[in-house]
Figure 1 (cartoon, rainbow, N blue to C red):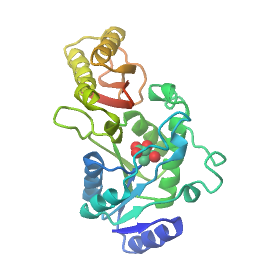
Figure 2 (cartoon, rainbow, N blue to C red):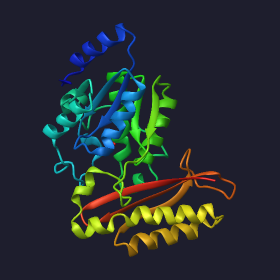
Figure 3 (cartoon, protein in one colour):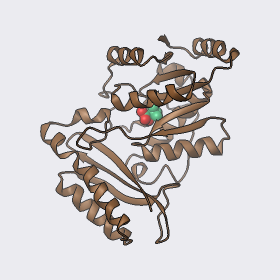
Figure 4 (tube, rainbow, N blue to C red):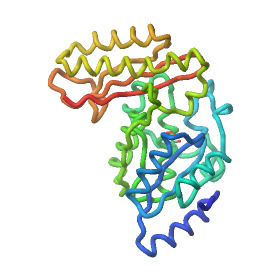
Length: 282
Ligand code: PAF
C-alpha cells in the first residue's frame, strides 16, 4: 500500500490506473479504524479494481465543544490494517492540503434541511463540515464508487443528496452496520465508554429493534412510539438526544401509508455520544 499526502501525488497515481480503465472506489474515513471500516474496505474491494482509503480528521465537522483534539488518532495500527486489507492507496492529507483557504475561510458545501434535523439539530454545522470535506474528497479522487456505512444514516442521506444535486458521476454504496455480538454498532467513539457504559450501550439497538417490531406489528402512532423509544433509552442509562421514526428515503416524517421507514436514535452515555438506526421495510 502506498501512502500519499498530496493531491498532486494522488492524482499521478490515479492517472496511471485510469489509463488502463481500472475502476476506483473511495472509502472516506477519519481513521482509528475498526472492523466496521474494514467491512467498507471489503465492499470497495469487491466492486472496484482499485481502492483508495482517506484518513482525515476533518476539523470543520467538529463543534467548538466537541472532541476534535482528543479524537483517537492511531495511524500505525490503521496502516497495518489497511495493508492487510490490500488497499492500494492511503490518502493522508494535511489540513492545509484539504483547506488551502483556511478551514474557516474555505468554500462551504451545505445540503439544506437534511442537515438541520436529527443529529444536525444537536450538532449545528456538523453536516456542513461533512458535506464540505466529502465534496472535496470526491473532486480530488473522482472515484467511480464511494462506500459509506449505514450506521451514519443521516450522513449517507446528505451525501446521496449532494451527489444527486451536483450531478456527480459517482455511485454511492451503503454498507450494512457492523456490530459487536451484543448488537452495539461499531464506532470509534465506543472507546469513550467505561465498563458500565459499555454494558448499557447495546440498550440503544434494543430500543430501536423494539420500535421496529411494533411498527411491523402494525402500530402507527409514531409520536407515541418515539416517546416509548426515548423512555427506553433513558432507562438503559442514556441521556437521549432523539428517537425518531422517519421515511427511509428522505428522512421526512412518515404517514400511516409509508412503507420504507428508518428508526434512528442518538444519545449520550458518559463521554460517548452514540448513534444507531434500524431500517423497517413494511
Ligand atoms: O464518517 C466519517 O468518518 C466522516 O464523517 C467522513 C465521511 C470521513 C467525513 O469526514
